[in-house]
Each structure stands twice: as structure tokens, then as C-alpha cells.
Image (cartoon, each protein chain N blue to C red):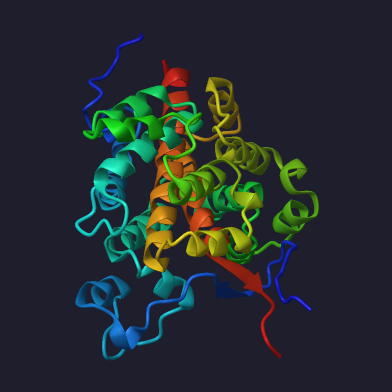
Amino acid sequence: MAQRANPEASPWLGAVSAAAQSRGNIFEMSRQAENAVIAPRDPGGFPSDWRHAVAARIATLNALPELAAHYLTGVTEPALRVLADPAETGRDTRERSVITFMDRVATQPRAVQAEEIEGLKAAGVAEADIVRLCELNAFMSYQCRVLAGLAALKGASA
Amino acid sequence: MSRVVHRFTRNVPDWQPRVTPVDLAKASPEQLDALKVTPSNTKVSDYVLVLAHDPETLNVRSPLFNGIMYDPGGLSRAERELGAIGASVVNRCIYCAAVHAARHAQLSKDTAVTDELFANGEKAKLGPRDQAIFDYSVKLSQSPPAVTEADTARLRQAGLDEAEIVDLILSTALFGWANRLMHILGDPVRKDG
């Protein structure tokens, strides 16, 4: 039962092999979307290492420890690993405002106000980077919910 | 007085960006490709122009959205919309809820379901199959997601097969994504005039 997957393997692997063969194209496109937000060709102000750490953080906020472990394996810079821990709030003022925003969008999107976007701009985050942050966060919300739903489906059919 | 819309409605509002949209005249080749701009198609919404700040994601996102909501087989189109609405109610994305409630009403030729959803939100009372679908989408949209094997079993009791459940998971999860763009990067505003 408690078979632990290789944390470096793609999180979509289990999804495709288990429940969802009828939607193989969707999981392939989901994998491409993961690449686009986690390891983009143009990462803007947020390098791939940082994105892996924040993806692990969002997986933890969504109570998905195996997914968090997967993203942690992609963090090569030790100083960034702390960001994967939701108790850590960021290493400087600008990062603190970004991390606060990311946590809010991940866990309380309904409460996010226009002023919070203005706050990011005031903290020096470029507008293109605000969109990149939202796409990273929004994709992680999608991936966490697909994996949580499929896990509850797999368990129920066993 | 603010024009921002705070109540759920099937009347699709306008959308006012909080981030400056990409200027089409200055867009890069990669942005133009992701925007699918051609000489005969130059009308692009502000929403998509905002997303064009991250063209690599926009480029893969659009076919993924279409696949999840429109690919044949599995869950009916109207029931996929119900999953999208469940997420949008939890995340209070007024714009997404309006678009997908209007689509649900059109596909099901019925406004009663979305009237009830907008009147009572997460506590809406629906027919048994719609209720199971909506309740599941609300639970999956919580943070952290709150679905268990018992929730899957309830979907099966309501008559959903495995492929339909996968489609419900996908359409609901997809709107966890869409809501975090639409609701975060702009405001729904009353149309002028």
C-alpha cells in the first residue's frame, strides 16, 4: 500500500498509469504546463530554483507531502530550501511581500484584494513577474487538486 | 462609485486588469504566437493580453483548457461547467462564475440550477446527481483539498463512472487555476452604458 514513489519522478506518472488513461492528452499537456511554470525558458525575476522551492511550499500548504518532496529535489541552492517551509516568511523585504502574496493566493484566493497587487508593484516586482507568479501559483493549485482527486479515486476503486 | 461587481450573476461583466496588458503593437514574436494573433484575427481581450506577459505558459494553457472543457466523451459539458462553477463559488471568482453559469444555463436549457447556486452558494440544494457533483467540486476546491474516498463513493452512488469522475476532477482543478488568474489579476466591473 504505502509504496513511496521515487521523488524525482514526474508527479503525473501515477496519474496516467492509474485512473485516467482516457485523458492521456490532458496529462501530457499538464506536464508541458508544469515545465512552463517550474522551468521556463524565460524565468523573469524568479529563477527555476526559487520556483521549485515555492512549488514545494504550495504542495505542503495543500497537504501533499510527496509532491512537496518531488519539488524539493529540484532545489539545488541550499539557501532557497527554507522557502519550502510555510513557517518561513522570506529572506528580505521584497521576498517577504512576494511570499505573503503567494501564500494568500494559494490558500485564500477569494480574499485577495487589488491593493495586494499594488503592494507587489511598490515592492519592486515587475508587472510581467506578477503574472508569472500567479501562473506558478495557479498551476500548482491545479496540480494539487488533480493529484488529490485522483488519490481519492484510486483508493475508492481498490 | 465603484463599478466593481461583488455579487454572483449570469450577466457576464467586463474585466478590468490590475496589471498593464501587453501592448499588441510591441508584442514579441513569442507573445504573438501565444496570442494566436493573425492578420484576420486581431481582437484579443485584456485578460489574454495580461496573460501574454508569460507567453510560454499561455501557449500550453489554452489547448489544455479546451481539452478539459470540450474534449468528447466522459462527463457531459454541462456537468463539467458545474465543476467549474463549484470552484468559482469557493474562490469567489465573480467573472468565471458568470461565464460558466451562463454556459451551464445554455447547455442544460435551464436557469434553475445556477439560480439556486447563486442564491445559496456552497449550501445550494440541487437534484441528487448535480448535488453530488457540486458538493465534490466545493470540497476539492478547499485549501487544502478536502476530498476523501467517501466523496468518490458518493459520486459513484450518484451514477458517475470512473471516466466521468476523472473529468470532474480535471474541470474543477482547472478552475482552481483559472480563478487564481481572473480573480487575482483583475476586477469584474459593470459594463458601461
